[in-house]
Amino acid sequence: MKEDIVDPVLEIHDLTVSYSRKPVLWDIDFSLPKGCIAGIIGPNGAGKSTLIKTIMGVIPSSSGYIKIFDQTLNAVRSRVSYVPQRESVDWDFPASVLDVVLMGRYGKLGLFKNTNKQDKRIALECLEKVGLQDYTKRQISQLSGGQQQRVFLARALAQEADLYLMDEPFAGVDAATEKAIIEILREMANKNKTIIVVHHDLQSVVNYFDWVILINMRLVASGPTQKVFNNKLIQEAYGGKLTLLTEIGNILEERQIPPREK
Amino acid sequence: MIAFWIILTGSLVAISCGLLGSFLILRKMSMIGDAISHAVLPGIVIAFLLSGNREPLSMLLGAGFFGLLSTFIIEYLHQKAKLQTDAAIGVTFTLLFAVGIILISVFTGKVDIDQDCVLYGEIAYVPIDLWILDDGTIMGPRPIYILSTVLVLIVLFITIGYKHLKIGTFDPAFATAIGIPTVLWHYLLMGAVSITTVASFESVGSILVVAFLIGPPATAYLLTDDLKKMLIITCILGVLISFFGYWLAYWLNASIAGCMTVLLGVFFTIVFIFAPNTGILAKKLKSNKNAISI
Ligand SMILES: Nc1ncnc2c1ncn2[C@@H]1O[C@H](COP(=O)(O)OP(=O)(O)OP(=O)(O)O)[C@@H](O)[C@H]1O
Ligand SMILES: [Mg+2]
Image (cartoon, rainbow over all chains, first blue to last red; front, side, top):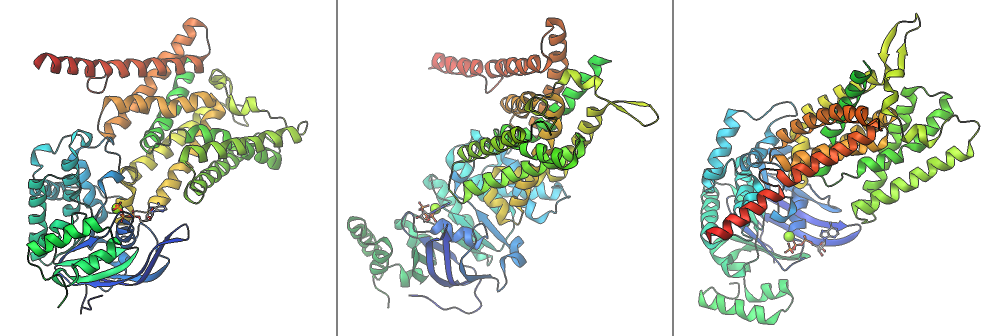
C-alpha cells in the first residue's frame, strides 16, 4: 500500500535500479511529506543503500524519475545531505575530525574557494551538537566506531540541508548516543527538515519514525508508521522469517499498536 | 655542476611523483604508476613510427595517450567485468607492454628504439643531454626544462584540485552526492600520472619513477596524520633522497638510481621502526608500558 500526499519533499516514480543490468530495485513508487522522520526498513540486501545512493545520484537509475522539492537533484543538491554507511570509507585516511566535518561545507564552495572562519564555526557547532567538541583535532582512525558515526552525522549537519538521507546512522552506536542522535533528528524535524533513515532495529521503529518505507527489492509499503508498520506488511517485507516475525508481533502487541491498518 | 644537475633532476622527479603518489597510495592504487610506465610503450613506438624521430613532444603525446587508455581499460575491467583493481591493472599493463614489444620487433631495423632506451633512461646522462639553440647557445640539460614544466603543472593541479581530490579519495560516494565530478577528477589524476611517469622515466628510468611514486608518500604516511603535511614531508624526503643518493653513488662509484632507491628503502625502514606514533618501536613501548601499569 502507498500513501498519497500533496506537496511532497521527495517523490519517486516507478524507479528501477540495476547493477550490471541485473535489477535490484523495481516498482519503487512513493512520496514523502515535509518535516517527517522516515525509516527505510527491509532485510539485508533489500536495496536500502542502493535506494539512498540512487536518490543522491551516486548510482544511476535505469528507469523512472526522482523529484526533490519538485525539482531534479542537480537543481537542489545543496539542500540535500547524505550520510553514507560508515564502513564505506577508509578511516585510516590522514585527516582530523574537524577536516572531515569541514567536508560538509565543500558542496557550497566552488573549485577555487577555501573553507573560511564561518565554515569552521559551523563545523565546530555541529561537532558540539553530536558531543564531539573535545575530539576536533583527533585523527579519525583513533575514534571508536560510534564516534566515527557521529563524525559523519556532524558532517551532514554542517551541510545545513533541508533533506537528510542517512544510511544506518545507528549502526554500532551505544544506547545513550542513539538517544542523543534521535533527539537531534527530532529537533531538525521540528524545524521542518525531512530526515530519511535506513534502520535495522525493528523494535525501535515505532518510537523513532513518523513514517515507514518497507522495501524488499520492490516497495512493500510506504505510509505513516501506525498505518503500515504491521505484522502482515513486515512479514511481506521480510519474507516469512517466522521466529523473527512472531517476536515483532509480540513487541507490537506490548506497545498496543493496532496490528492491522484501520 | 654535474652533481647539481643530477640532484636537481632527481628532486624534480621526486616531487612530481611524490605529490601524485600520495593520492595514489591513499586510493590503494600505488601500482598504477608501475602499470602506466609499462603500458605506454606502444604509444612511444607508434609516436616514433609516425614522426620518424625521437622528438620528446610527440613521444610524450603518444605515451600520454596510452597511459590514459590503460587507465580507461583498467576502470572498465574493474567496473564492468568486476575484476579486482590489482588484477585489472596486471592484465592491462602486461597486455599493452606486450603490444609494444611486438611493435618493436616487427619494425626492427626501421626503428632506432629499444626497451632499454624507453624503460631504463639513465639519470647519470642528464647533464650531457643538452639543449642547444640553433645559434649554438647551450641552455643546459634538456630534461630539466621538461621536468620543471611537468612539476609546475602538477603543483598547479594539486593546489587547484586539493579539496576535490581529498574528498574524492576519502569518500567518493559523498563527494559525488554533493556534486563533485569524482570520475572526472579520477581521470585527471590518471592523466597527470601518465604524463609525469612518461616525462620522468625518459630521463631517470622507470625503476626510480616507481620508487618515487610510492616510497616517499608511504614513508610520509607513517609520519603524519594530516594530508597537507603528508604532501610536504613527501617533497622534503624526495629532495633529501636525491641529494644523499647522488653522493652515496659518487662515493661508492655505483648506479645513481640504484643508490637513490636503496636510500628510499633505508628511510622507510627507519621510519617504520622509529616513527613516534606508528613505528613498531613506539607500539612496542606502549604495549610494554600498558603491561607494567597493569
Ligand atoms: N556494487 C554492486 N554491484 C553489484 N551488486 C550490488 C552492488 N552493491 C549492492 N549490490 C546488490 O544489490 C542488492 C542490494 O544491496 P544494498 O547494499 O542496497 O542492500 P541493503 O538493503 O543496503 O543491505 P544491508 O542491510 O546489508 O546494508 C544486494 O543484492 C547486493 O548484492
Ligand atoms: Mg546497506
